[in-house]
Length: 363
Ligand SMILES: Nc1ncnc2c1ncn2[C@@H]1O[C@H](COP(=O)(O)OP(=O)(O)OP(=O)(O)O)[C@@H](O)[C@H]1O
Ligand SMILES: [Mg+2]
Image (cartoon, rainbow, N blue to C red; front, side):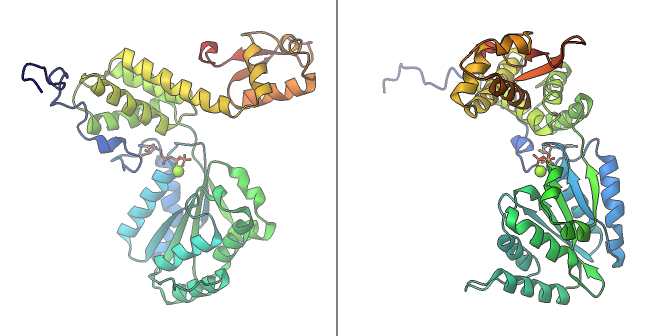
């Protein structure tokens, strides 16, 4: 290459500097130093699990709440604290998206007790037998966290939970912590399992913009260099995530993507423009994912909706589709968050006003 030609790296701004102090702070498995706004849940869990330290029985839990509200983080934190405090307790964390059958959950429990799964295939009932033997020989109280429990195969759910909740030896039991977004999975359990589980509910509500600000500030402090983002823009991110189900993951993700984009542009500070363009991009990707789930006819109907029109007006278009069907579509659009329906003045029966929650130009 001729010497006179400029090296492609020579024009890159701030090439030796990074906006990140520690990028791992933004990775999904990062454990923050503080868990904000979850004092009540931490207290409730630790109070109820305390009896395990003196070899007594503890409650089983059903932890529920929308995505990104700290359910996994908080449960693991409390259990880590507990096992560091007392050798009498050990816990196993199982994510039922990965281990979604009774067989694979049981295999994990065997290894948890230090048992070895034989190479030859064992029937699931033989594994359960093996677990009972290992349990009897063990010297600690086992706590099993079953995260995303609603992802467990339906036909395995009741049997698994029934076995685990009924078994005891020498006054020792399995303590179960079930985590889900969707509390109604309980309805899939047969009634004898429901009653033998004796679950204590623990709700994780969505975060407010104030909560999200605290969460973000810690990530900013540990993850980014000084002055990388202004207080105002942290507020913008918190507000953005607060109206999207109060999901901390959305907040952290937006901050991370905005920092990445700024760095790509050679900046050591996140500007308002970058933040807005990254958040619009995230919105349009999400919108496209949702649109991909619609049928052709649904999409056609969605496209002709107008801001503030009434349901009656919407029904009068696309005559080839039955009104009943269109009414069903509107409910689906509302559920997907495309539109909001609000009652029109009293005395107008079922007529409602349609507000569009998406940018028509993005369609
Ligand atoms: N109170 C908090 N303080 C600090 N970080 C938090 C807090 N709550 C959640 N986070 C962070 O937000 C992300 C999502 O949290 P977590 O995985 O615990 O949510 P979840 O309720 O289990 O969500 P899902 O239902 O989708 O599994 C993680 O990166 C976690 O570290
Ligand atoms: Mg989780």
